[in-house]
Image 1: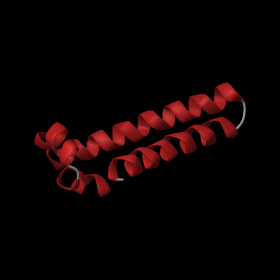
Image 2: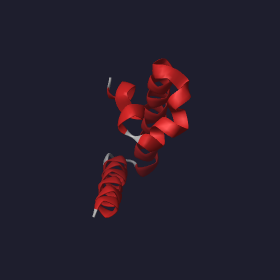
Image 3: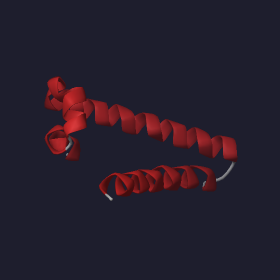
Length: 73
């Protein structure tokens, strides 16, 4: 599970949830993924088709990549 090594790979995450233990960090990842899924399902129901959550997912992924690129360069 990728979230198990997250606090050692990312100092900000380690400082925020480092004391939670492996199980706590994994549970946090599961809860966050569940919440995102609920929001995307609600977007699909509200939008009436699959394009709405797909575009929302694309926008969040693209903004994360752009922000990381901005920080590195």
